[in-house]
Every structure is written in structure tokens, then in C-alpha cells.
Amino acid sequence: MRARGGLDQAFRRFFRAVAPDVVGLLVAQGQVSVAATGAFLDWSEGGATDVAALVTLEHDADEARRALLGALRAALATPIDQEDLYILSERCDRVVNALRDIALSAEALAWSPDRHAARMAAELHAGMTALVEGFAQLRGDFGPAGVAADQARTHARSVVWRYRDAVSELYRSSDLQAAVVGRELYRPYARAAYLVEAVADRLWYVVLADV
Image (cartoon, rainbow, N blue to C red):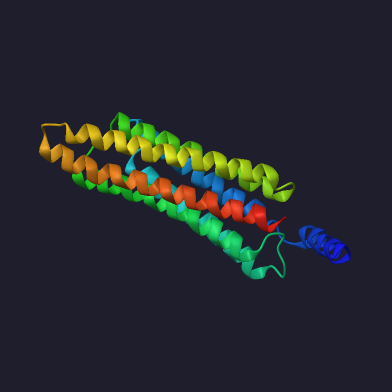
């Protein structure tokens, strides 16, 4: 068993040396995702970012994902399982799509983000930032990637708690229409948090698969 384990490690080192930098491309897509969550945070805080900028960042994320998928198709072997890379990429894409959709819905309903939305957006941005830091660790010792995944999960769960606080306040409001619209816009923030947590879960799976 020891000999086989040593052989497996040798193959891994060889493939990491000759494969295209798919981890780098995953990190690049992740960096666009971080830019998108940062812009979404600014929008949620009432900053200068508008909906059009978020749509543009979503397109940029799609381009980065296509670059990764192209490399995966061309690669004979990759240092990380192709399925894992595909799923991490796809789940990051879902996060960015979700944030774009929140902004588009808000625009359609003439809803302006409030302090609850800003707090949830801050946690989403922190979670995505942690994930991309974890992606960068997949070039070497995978252990720190697991730590980053845990950090991202913590931020994602904080969104859910903040969502509950936001909804609780809405139900005490005397403005029924505002409460209904607010709840419809708060809920996607919580769903986006579950998407961030899904990325973290898959990142942990990659860490465990390397053991």
C-alpha cells in the first residue's frame, strides 16, 4: 500500500508540472466573482455601483468561466479532478448570477437596499473573498483551503441570521406593501448565502480528496 501511495503521489506531482494552470484560471474566475460581490456590496450600501455595472461583471465572470472550461477540455490531465474544477466554477457562477438577479429585481420593483441588505451583502463578499483565497491554496498544501472554506461557510451562515433579523423587523412594520416587497428582496440574499456555502462544501470535498 505504501508503494502504491508513493506512486500516486509521483503521478500527481508529474501532472501538476505538465498540466495547464487550471487552478490559476479558477482563481481568475474567482477574482471576478469577488469583484462582483464587492460591487454588489457597494450597490447594497447605496454607493456609486449601478445595476448595469453588476450585469457587466456577470458577463466578465462568464468569460472567465469559459476560459477555464476551454482549458479543461484541452487538458490531458489536471492536478485536481476536472469534475471538481467544473463544479467549483459552476457554483461560483451561480453566486454572481444570483446577485445580478437581485439587483435587476430591485430595479423592477423600485426597491432601494437598506442597512439589512448592506449587512448581508458584506457577509457575502467576505465569504467569496475567503473562497478565492482557498482556491489559491490548491496549488500546494490543501490544508489552508479547508480553513478558507470554513471561513466562507461562517460568513454564509451569518447572512441567514441577518436575514432573519431583517424579516422580523419587516413584520413589525405598519407599511404592508413595503414589508412584502422587502421580504421578496431579502430572501434572495439568503439564497445567495446558500450558494456560497455550496462552493465552500465542494472546496472541502477537494481538500479531502487530496488526502
